[in-house]
Length: 298
Ligand code: HSE
Image (cartoon, rainbow, N blue to C red; front, side, top):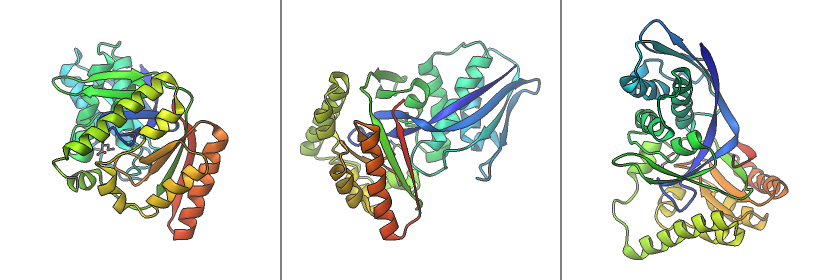
């Protein structure tokens, strides 16, 4: 038997929630075709020009599937063909989409032996291949959809889905390279108590704002005093994008995951389009190639 999976792009951190908040986007999505084979193990077929590894231990989908197969009650193998539409290195969860899509597809083919939290745990092995660390803030929303809180990953994933009001998302991807591993390396290992207080106030505010459909509270809570000041230096035009997007009506936003993409949240599709216009003006002015997406949380 075989199955086709659409794996969504995701925005990790959601400004104040480093490693603990993330949401899924309606577009873009990767398309993955999986089938069970008689040959044990994992076979990866990349149907794109990104030159991603096909050796399962070095491929994010492969590493996630190997983790699943270690616990799966089957002697069969899995073949996965991947059409990537989410550009690797863009900061909107390209590696997570491959890892999450692979384990969701394999689970369905095997008759759903695993819970979603278990699938998150397997897919995190894929993220480790991509960035050197197991973080779940792209994986969890890719698997659950919507906005997710990763309350904890140890001793096992504890994922909380957060019902959210209608929110439109504008993403700009300036075509510069930032590796997640590098973007983590530069972070300070310790934070000041006063910054931690500000940050957990914002995380609580954002979660409450989503649950109460309080757009003003959501906007006020989209503030990061710990990670953004360090990472934003790597992204040309960052301050201008934030300022111009707010002027265009966005609620707020910031770095998507570890960058270089920047995302902004808006109440309406019209505002999200106006924000995209503002982003285009900025990167055209800076003479940096870019791509914009106007989509919504899904
Ligand atoms: N939370 C991770 C980070 C997401 O910011 O490093 C990486 O996509």
